Amino acid sequence: MNFLRSVVFVVWLYGLVVIVGLLGTPFMLLSRRWGMQTVKLWAHLVLFGLRYICGVKVEFRGLEHRPKGAALIAGKHLSMLDTIAPFVILDDPCFVLKKELTYLPFFGWYIWRTRMIPIRRKDASKALRAMVIDARDRLENARQILIFAEGTRSEVGQDPEYKPGVAALYRDLEFPCHLLATNSGQCWPAHGIIRKPGTVVFEFLPPVPAGLKRGEFMSEIKTRIEGASNALIAENRKA
Image 1 (cartoon, rainbow, N blue to C red):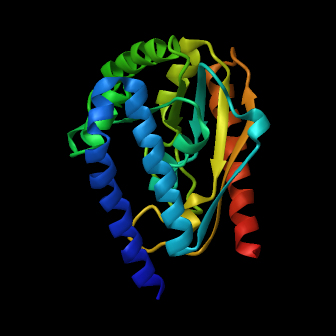
Image 2 (image 1 turned 90 degrees about the horizontal axis):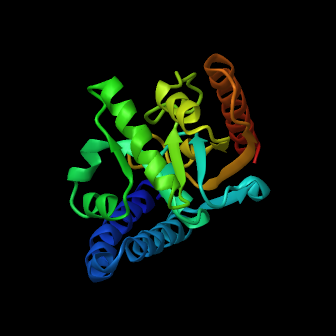
């Protein structure tokens, strides 16, 4: 039964990409803001299907720490859901993501129209410089820059290596860094199509102030993000 529900949800997920993507195209052409509203509608519908098809509830905590206006956010990355849920709760999110995603039908159109920050990971130094320039531009428009500190999805229980991209943004932008923990991989694993019933929590943590040295900053965000995420994972296992 769980497998069947998961298959139905996958059809729902990618069916929405096509339907909402096509219906939203005229609005996307009007302005970036309209394109963002289309993506937000898609995200709400995905979470609706996730709950009523797969029995996965999404909960947001720590909203007193949720940034508004220009901000830098470092997030835990366990699932594709981590790239969807923030559209529901943030005013104007801007993801740092791999360039290859811009080549996908529908996804790529909206990535460009909503002015996300695609990076080429092959040339690391050049990619970091371009990322910082783009991030400064987006912050001038009061957007929330969200970067996944691990650089890619990790498995639940894995001890990931945090990549230098988040440190480069923190240093050069001179902004506090907000933190986002999650247990998303328990219900929507990093790989495969199975979705497991339960509660996914996204929790905003108090921000790290600007100005820390790189080593101190990286140690601080990893300790806090991993600690909070592991606590959410343990809580979900007990439920």
